[in-house]
Image (cartoon, rainbow over all chains, first blue to last red; front, side, top):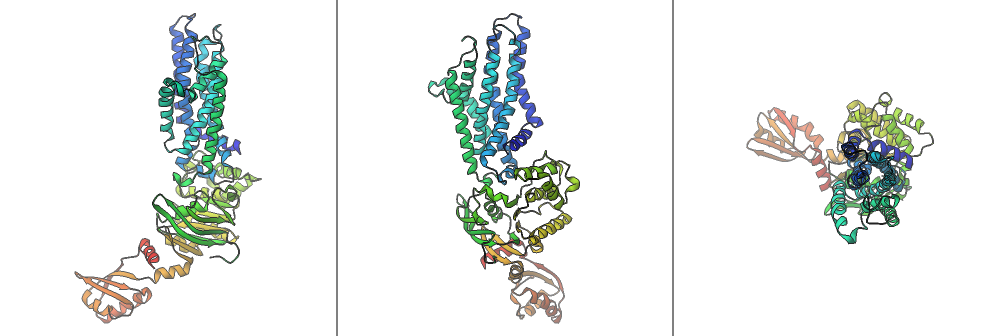
Length: 246
Length: 308
């Protein structure tokens, strides 16, 4: 059943216009990294720092959360909007199966776009002696982040009609400003978890890339967040009154 | 409306409100197999009631049961119930066949392809099953939605305004199909705001107005009630004053008003009035040139039923 919902959702998520928008988001850091590569010397020792910065600033901080936001809120939220969620709700299937199927689809779709972005951005660095496992570290970290963000945004889409706006506020106000500059709340940021996981998996020196959270803490907190938000989404969906938005 | 044993559908003292707005107000009824029409003007609370019957909405008070079990948060319900929502939405990118097949697979049917074939055949959508549902007309969408709702052969079918957007031929075909399903012992409840649809299809009727159950029972009895209510007509003739004085003497006429030459006649015996009025006019030497019912809208009929 989960596989059926997963396949159905994946087909809905990768619609032409949305896929184009997400591809554009993924292309931005790739283009910037390529521009830097062609504009600098072959042996530019600032390359690892630049690539790590591009992956951190453009993918972890912007591309990943926005991609997850677009896909996560669409996975179920769009079905509420257009009324097709009715066809899942009127079947003898557990609400948890709907949430898990939707989450897996949003995660996979988001993961594909961010991994392409990471691989494309890190391409100039591959094969260089000072690569330090940066690309693989960001691949793993963004895939983990994609899961956490997708779970959060799916939960938001069940709770709020304007999940997209609330998600944008979370990404740019909470993660971009509050948790970035207020020391006490740094543990409450999916971006911080993603960076922490990446940092734990790379041997890059601190001047190239450094996270504020250590790897194990970040991984545990990310896993806890996935569990909490997914459990909330299931609980909320169990009590969801279908005509709330009809 | 029930024959004694546990009814298929039971609604007991059910109300539903949204903040201060009461959508459904203390409704009680029971339904057995056969076709029941849920009749009422737009905004009467029909969809809210159907949403509660379908387990999508929690009653604020009271209880809704289908086959003896509460509907709210009961997903097993859908093994026996097929539901057609009013909204036109379908998965636009899927073909009609894939849309119905998806429904069959979500029901975990042992042979989804065969169930899909049967359901599509029943709604006569075979020729269009290979086309994407996004390109379907309203009537075709209604039929493919019904196919998806009956693919698991449900004992109970709930349909919210199923004839919206259908042309007369499609409507007749759907009515025949629903009659055949009812003859197989199923319970079918459909909502409509159009009296003629309910009249043609339903054996029993529930009339809902402003969230309240205004009338329920055999359709003929309700129809009689609607016909026997007081009627008001604007009558035009060659001599309104003479006609007014002649009409007022007849037992079927309960009131006559002549206002700026305009004659308005009120009767509480529709059948007698329609037979007697032309004779009375002829006897008075007056020719009736026009008769217009002033309160024939469905809303006014419903208002009468509520006020009764």
